[in-house]
Amino acid sequence: MAVNDSGSPRVILLLGSAPDVVRCAAWPRQAFSKIVAINNAWRVRPDWDFLVHAGDFPPDRLPRGDVLRQAQIFSAAHYVPAQNAFGGFVYAGGTMAMTAAYWTIHSQKPDVLAFLGCDMIYDQPGNTHFYGIGRADPLRDDPTLRNLEAKSARLLVQALRRDCLCINLSNLPRSRLIFPRLTVDELSGLSHSRIAEMKAEILAGIELDKAEKAEEIEQDLGYFYEDGMYWKHLDEIDEMYLADIDRLWMAAVETGLTKLPISPTRGEIGSFAAHSAASLSCVLVSKSLASWRSCSCIAGSPKARLTMRPRCTAGRASMASAQRWTCLYSWTDRNSPESLYMRPLARPPYQGHTAMSAMV
Image (cartoon, rainbow, N blue to C red; front, side, top):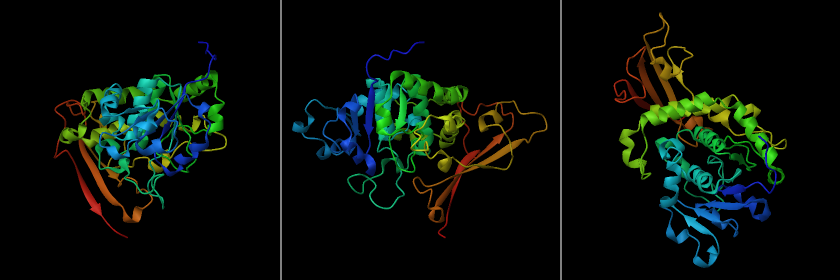
């Protein structure tokens, strides 16, 4: 299909509150069709178009009426329906970087969604946010935020399906976003045809069958809450299943990560390798936990599988000596007639967790 190169691509800048977000203050406004600020990021530059803030964002931190001009403010009443259109908060991730991104794709339909200040890295010395030391929302003890790389992988695929390319403008050495990186100059030089080429290159490296399997499991589990208040239903949400879904999203993009088009001056994509989930199993198998119970195991294979997955405290990957390890485990019978993801879901004593703490 021929690409219409008439007019400029619709490029939207999404601003978080990481310290390097202040770099955009000097960027030309004409480089972006719209600017979306998350929470406090409206303070970074005065010409933003939309502010998307959390439902519990303090009212005294909102911009005054004389600052708004033609800008608009959106909160839960607007972004909850938008995120629901992509499967809901439990699967998309309950932090504002993901929520604002899904809202922007849903409502503004950009050709490119460019992220800055959304790297969600908090283990470096100094300020955590551009305004000083702030609360790191992605580090909440929240079952939807165990694997932020997987949430960004899901967002990458969902955006591409809606003809939107997600890229990261950060120049920090690490990021929880796995998107390709560009400089603002490279972004400004993108044509419709080049954007289409980049989308095609990324899609060619994505294993869509795994992405579709992840979505199938999401629908089977039914962790969907129309009002967005999933935290009122935590007793219904099993983290083991969410971890399996996260692994599928990561597996869907893993093969193509090294092939993603990236800036020749940046030399990296994200921090996928540094944050890949670890697991230890007493049976070495190539099958996933789901397929282990799918009645497809060959004769003579082990009758049961014990899987233990260490889960590190969020944001403290480089502090192994002071890490608290939580080992999630599952005991799965071979060729079990019950589906792993269909109700009634397997419950203890077959699944559970134990924690070990040590200071070295």
